[in-house]
Image 1 (tube, rainbow, N blue to C red):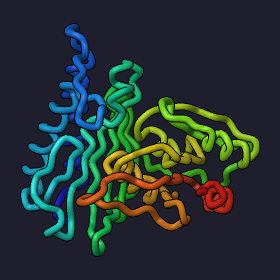
Image 2 (cartoon, one colour; image 1 turned 90 degrees about the horizontal axis):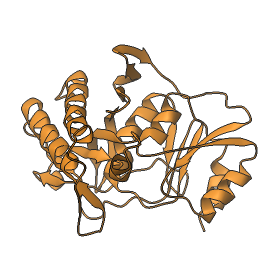
Image 3 (cartoon, rainbow, N blue to C red; image 1 turned 180 degrees about the horizontal axis):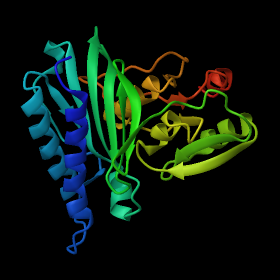
Image 4 (spheres, rainbow, N blue to C red; image 1 turned 90 degrees about the vertical axis):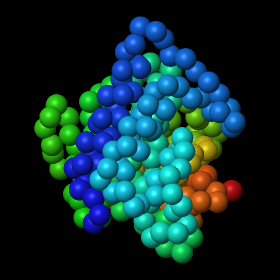
Length: 266
């Protein structure tokens, strides 16, 4: 391992401080639109800069793919960092607290990538989830670290988590098919982290996402004993170079809903 996981956690928390400096400012939040019409704020940029500095200081030879820019060429290496400096920019603009910092360490398999370690930090809640193949899934809150795991025996009503900003007919159909459930809406990678720590059982995502939106939480979910599945029910993998968009995916504590998931891939 070319890095100390706890140093990466520290980098995510430092980026969170940069975000909160903008969030708590009396100047208001200035919003620009990127080429794809998604919003961009000063917090996105300051968090990106903080993460780049931090990762280059601890692991200078590994490329970094960030939503806000790229350092190095991941096509020429076996590993890469994958970063979303501010996941949930729309939630940040709404000032509802449901935004995160995502940092994932990725390993290449041919032209596809899988996460080996991830950190998701929620700056407003001062809560951090992290874990990976060699790092137990953990939760830090109020300066206390605890080991976490998915809910291994989910019972009705199933705890279903869904996006607060993206919801369509297919989401409603899937929810109806799983039977009795409680629906909780939230933003950013908090949804997948809720599955990782056992707060929720299931997070289906039919809306558009990019690799940096979910890879960090993916690592935490798997470290906690859960699954992140593609439309065919196989482990989700990623493209960091040509097409950063993800297919639909399912974050789950159990494989018991795989058949229902498959039925909704029309």
